[in-house]
Image 1 (cartoon, rainbow, N blue to C red):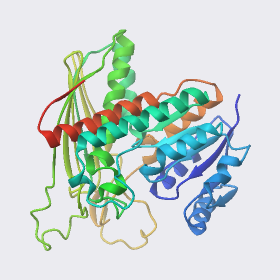
Image 2: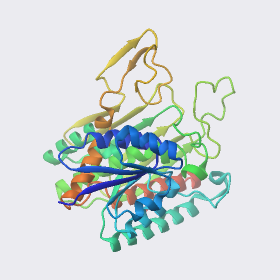
Image 3: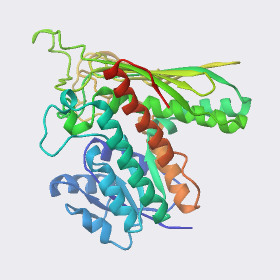
Image 4: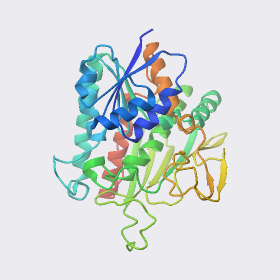
Length: 389
C-alpha cells in the first residue's frame, strides 16, 4: 500500500473545505506534511488548525520534498495547470481543485471578458488541457479532479440507485444559486476565467456529466456530448446603488447569470442554471428524471436542521451556513456539510485510489469534458448559436 503524504498549496476557503475533509478520511494513514501559502501567517494558521507539520511560502519546498507524494492544489485557477505539470514531472500525484483551468488573457490585460472572442478562449483552453493530458500520461501518476459534487452523498446515493436499476436518464436539471462570492476578485475575467458559469455552474455540470457516465457504464452504452446551447447575462446591471445594497456580486466583465443546455448522443438532455446574484444563502440542487424514476438531490439547502435565532450572541465563530448574511430568524443550518457536499468523500476516494492503485472516480477525463462544456457554452452565448461536436 502506497503511503499518502500530502503537500497542500493554497490557504483560502478551499483549504478550510479540504482540511475539514481530510480530518474525516478514515482507514488510511494520511500524513499532512506541508502547507504552502502566499504569506507565512496564513500558512501557519492552516497548519495549526489542521495539524500540518510545516508551513512555507515556496511551492518548490513541496516539489523537492521526497516524502511528499501528493500535491493538493487549491490556488487561483490560473495556477492550476502550471502547478499540476510541475508536480507531475516531479513524480507526485495531483489533486486539483475545480475548475481545472480557464482563459485569463495576457498578463495585466483588463476587460478580458468583453474584448477577447470566446472562440479564441475555447481553443486556448483546449490547447492547455492537451498539454496537461500529455504530462499525465507520461508521468504515470494519478490526477484527481476535486469536484466535490460528484461525491456529495445525495448524488452518490442517486448513482447507486440508477446503476442498480439500469435506468435511462432522460433529463436532468441543476441549480446553483448564491449571493456573491467569497472572493473580492470574482467580478474580473482575468482572475477567474469567467463568471458564475465558471465558479458555480461547473459544480452541477460536472455532477450531471458524471451521472450520465455512470448510466452509460451500467447499461453498457457509449454516450457522448452532442451539442451545447447557452445564454449568459448581467442581470444586476440595471440596479441602482441603493437597490444593489443586498446583492454581493459585483461583475465587471463577467456574467452573473448563466444557463446551459447539454444534448447527449442518445438524445437526452440536461440543463444547468447558475447565478451569484440571488438572495437567501446557497442553493445547490440536482433533479434527475428517468424512464422509471424521479429523484431530487438537495445539497444545500437541506432540512436536517432548521433553527430560529432571536439574536446572534455567541455565534460569531460558529459556521452556520454558506454565504448567509445573517443568522437571525429561521435558517437552514449546515450539518456535516463537508460530508453532504462531498469534500470528505472525494478525499477518501482519492486516498483509496492512491493506496490501492485504482483509477480515480473523478479524474482528468471528467475535468476535460467539463471545461469543454463551459467554454463551448461561452461560445454559444456570445455567438447566439448551438455548438455541435
